[in-house]
Length: 302
Ligand SMILES: [Zn+2]
Image (cartoon, rainbow, N blue to C red; front, side, top):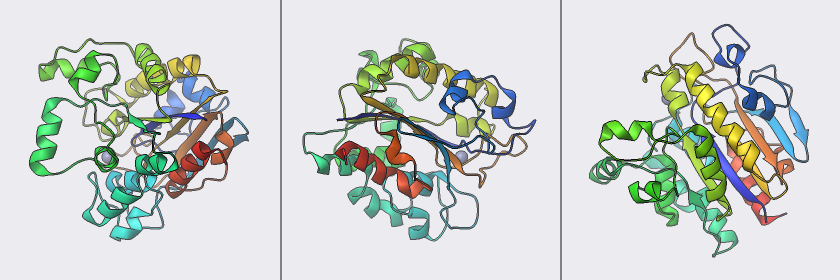
C-alpha cells in the first residue's frame, strides 16, 4: 500500500512570471525539480508521467471574489465544494455551513473508512496556548477540526520533544519566544523527520502557512526567505523518501505569495504535485475538489 506524505502549503498560486513573483526571481532548486526543471509559474509545462504529476488546479471553485482558507482548505480536505455550500469564499476558519462536511467527509475519516486499522497522522505540533484558545472560543482550524472529527491526535509539546512532530515554521525557532524549551532544528532535519514519521501511517499531513503570512507581509521574513526555507525542506524529503513505495503530495488552497505587488490572496490556480508511487491518480485533477477523492483512490489501490 502506498504511503502518502502530504504537504499542504497555504497561499501559493501559479502566477505569471514577473519581477514581483518570487518564484521567478529566487533560486529554488527543489521546487524546480518538482516541476521537472521549471519555476513554479503559470508557464511551467504540465507533467503527467506514472510517477510524477505537476499541474495547476482551480481554487476559485466557481465562486466570485478572492478564495479564502476556510472554504479552500475545507474543500481540499473533503472533496466537497465548501465555497458553494457557504455561497462565498470564507476564512480563515471554517464556516459553520461546512462543519457537517468536515465531520463526515474529511480525508482522515475517509481513509479510516477504507480500513479501520488505518489511522492517518497530522504531523504539526501546537503550543499549549493554541489548545487553550481553540477550546475557549470553540474555534478550530480546518485541519485541527478534521483531526477532532476523526480521532486523529493533535500533537503538542511532548510529541515535539520526542521528535515525533514538526513545528509550523519547520525549525521550531518560533517556539522560543513563546517560552517553550524546544530544540531548534534545520529544515533538512525537519524533512528527514517528516519522512521517518510518515513511515508509520498510510497518510501523514503537514501544514505550512508561513507562505500565506509572508504574502500578506504579516511576518518579518520575506517571501524569498520563506520559499528558500521550504526548498530545503523539500530537498530533504526528496533525498530521504522512497518513491517506489511512497507518494509526496503538495498543494495549496489559494494563491498569495506569487504576487509580490499585492498583499491579498489571488485567483490564480494552485500547483498540484504528486511524486512517487501512485502519482498517476492525480493526473486528471482540475480543482481543489478533486484532491481528497484521488488520495482515497490511491490508498485503496484502485
Ligand atoms: Zn491568507
